[in-house]
Length: 292
Image (cartoon, rainbow, N blue to C red; front, side, top):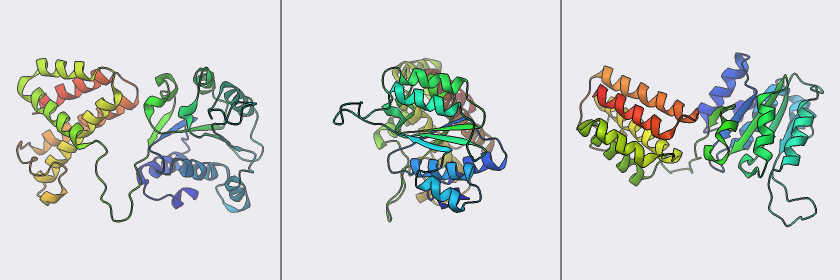
C-alpha cells in the first residue's frame, strides 16, 4: 500500500489504513500539522491507496498529476494579476464542486486534495461547506492545513481530523508540542483546581475563553502529567518523565491515573469536535479534581 512509504506519522497512517481496510472511508478529512510534516505527501499516498490500490501505472499517474480521478487544488494568484496574493477563491471551490458531481472516470473513488486550505478567502469557505454538507457518492476530500483555527468550525466539524506531528531532525529529541511556559502555566492551573476547587476552575475557564490553542495546551499538559504519573507508578526510569522530578509529588492509584488519562482523551476529542474551549477545560479540571 502507498501509505507504507510514509514515515514518522504512524498515528495518521494507522487511521487511514483502518478506514481503507474496514471500508469506512469518510467523505472528508482534515490533515492538520506544521509545514514539512508530510501532510501533502500523505494525502497523495492516501489518494493512490484509494484509486490505485494495486499500484503500477495508475499510481504513477497520480504522482505525475495525470490521474483523472485525483485532483489537487492549491492557492493561485488572482486572474489577470500573476503577482497578486495566492489564495483559494470561490471560483476554485465552484470548479471542485462541478468536478465532484461527475462520476469517477476509472477508479472506485474520486479524491480532491485541497492544499493549503487555510488560504481560502471571502466566500470560499461557505461555498465549500455546501459540498461537505451534500457530498457526492464515492468522493473523498482532503483538506491540508497548518492549524484547526485556520478554517471555520462549521467546515472542520464535517471532516475527520488527522493530526500530523512535526518531523524530527536526526539526532534531535522529540519534545511535547507546547512551550515550557505554557506547560508550567497549565500545571499551575491543575494545582489550583485541585486545591481551590470550583472557584479556581471558573477563573481558569474565564482566562481561556475562546482561545482554542490555549485550551489544547492545557489539555495536553494534563495528559502529559498523568502520563508521568503512570510512568512513576510502573517504576519507569525517571528520565522518561516530561516533568522531571514532579510526578512523584502526587501519588495516585492506578484506577485514578487511568481515569485521568481517559478524561484527558475525551477533552481532546471535544476540542477537535469544536466544543467550547472554555467549557472543555472546565469539565476536564472538574473531573481531574474529583479523581484526585
